[in-house]
Image 1: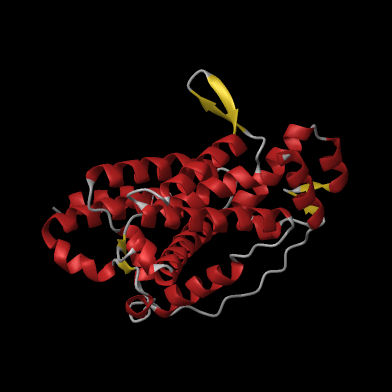
Image 2: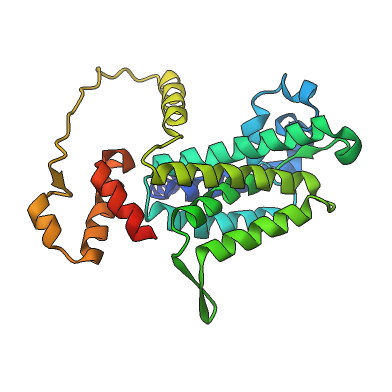
Amino acid sequence: MNSFLQDIKYKYARLNVFEKIIVFNVIIFLLSLLLREYLAWFELPSDFSEAIVKPWTIVTYAFLHYEPLHLLFNMLWLYVIGQMFLNLFTAKMALNVYFLGAISGGVLFVLCYSLFPEVFGRNYLVGASAAVRALLIFLCAYMPNQEFRFFTFNIKLWYIGLAVIILDVIGVFGANSGGNLAHLGGAILGYIYAKKLTQGKDIGSGFGRFMDQIVDFFKFSKKGPLKTVHKKKSKVGGYTKSEFKEFPDQKKIDVILDKISKSGYDSLTEAEKEYLFKAGK
């Protein structure tokens, strides 16, 4: 039994951040089959006066799925988009976009339902759609001309993003108005995040530091103080600037992306960020 648990623990540790989120969502779904009435405490209410006394629901709602197809489609989207995202950016930035997208979707949902109760009525929000939508629109806005293979032809990412936004806007006037409002909230966050990042500003860095503090607070093991390491930016991915200039364009992009995967987007110099931005266009 112990070896079985150790094997599961080892395999789970090898998953990337989005694969772990998928596993967690599936576990919560299975629990909902038995404990649905208890999990209602984690749904996001549309009424502002109720939501304000349940602040945790602005995040927890994104882990709740009560319908198998709702879970399936959200997790399939998350898996595909997540792999694309992690090939370009760090896991920390991926989580920033994901959770900020969920929060933004929840905020727009509560805001619209509270301002126009006669239009939308009263409802509760569940599902990871807003968070997934933030990741998708982020990629579409950050590298709009990147082509995505769709069956037998290629399609640019910005076409996909535009089609998704149009469907969400139309959906606001349908049966799932609350869900589509949340989608739009996540999409807005993803778009703004990407555009600010192309300008060299990571708007999720403060949120990331806040989450780090929360994680550190719940750590019981004592660790020594962290040492500040000052990195020299005279080199690009281990190469001198003169060596880097001699590389072909694709090699330069690969070197910069490798640097991001190892040290994070913030480790790039302004010149490297500008080069990556131009290459994305």
